[in-house]
Image 1 (cartoon, rainbow, N blue to C red):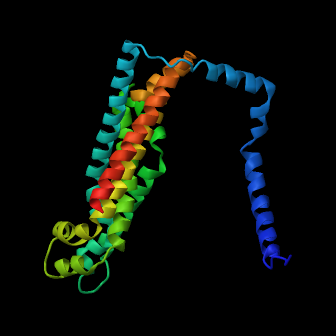
Image 2 (image 1 turned 45 degrees about the vertical axis):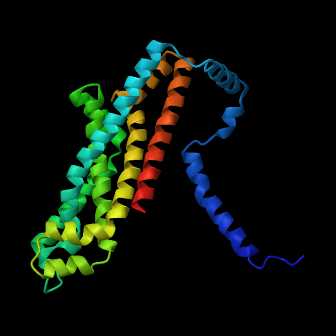
Image 3 (image 1 turned 60 degrees about the horizontal axis):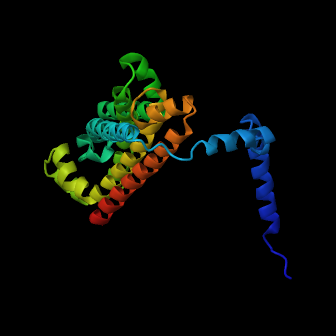
Length: 270
């Protein structure tokens, strides 16, 4: 059988990856063999066995339905606020929509300084995960979905602003430049030049982030931000596996529903 001529390169690459990865695994205390310990297996089986049968009382299902709706409302309201902040920030950081570029092709120093300051703000907002914002806001506004809504709005504003600007910068500049060069304002250039060219990609990314916001809303519930996650946290603390099983199934259906809505909207855009 002929020898693979690239075997030395593949072996070298594998060795380098292992040398780089091994210290990280040690630092992270990655010990998967603990899962196969007899005590861990017994505890796992005992916990999973408590899932059957799932809780299905009418009162509990009503509580789960209310919490699920609260999760969807938290994610949607947070995304709406994030977009309200991201759209004007996108106008500021998108270099193509800078009036000072017309003629000279250069950006004025004051406009450049403002753009860098806004970019730094977007970096700050998206650098802090929504879970951390929720932890801080729960101490300020108290338990409940208000903290979750604000947390999603802050983090997702930074994400949307950055990606919106990148999408607009990478789109065809002809229509936008023609409008700006003929005296159009930045807002009209965005609405009638850059936006139609990038609309499908912008909406697709926004829908994807809405899906992520729904998942994030559940996670933030574990720190007291309300919704389905908070109910799951309460059930876990009480070791009520049957309640947890029901909420996990509802969570899967919730994410599947968000994915179905997302796919439908993307098909219509296509």
